[in-house]
Picture: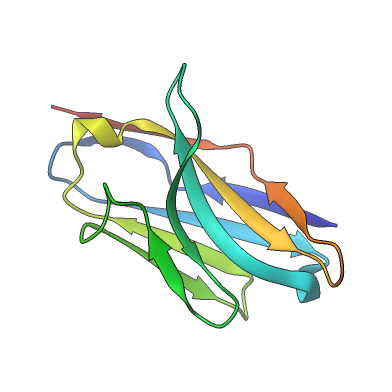
Length: 118
């Protein structure tokens, strides 16, 4: 079992930057991919960025070129550097860690609020 805790959300003005962190604990030797999703009330949770165990990366279309995901395997931590923030980036950001050897499991954090003011 893997536990996931996010940190780093907050309030920022448009054009500013924030860095989110997500640390995994527990059975970390089974971790596969680590990623970030975001959700606004009444809408589905959307992919922001994901990084695989081998370093492959995918970004959501709306954040390409502005956000950067990185991963420190020694610390079992994934980061999301968010630059050039826009009001439409306002959401609760969730970290998801995929773990498992045979069967795969989704492990979600509690979410961290990011608010971008215009």
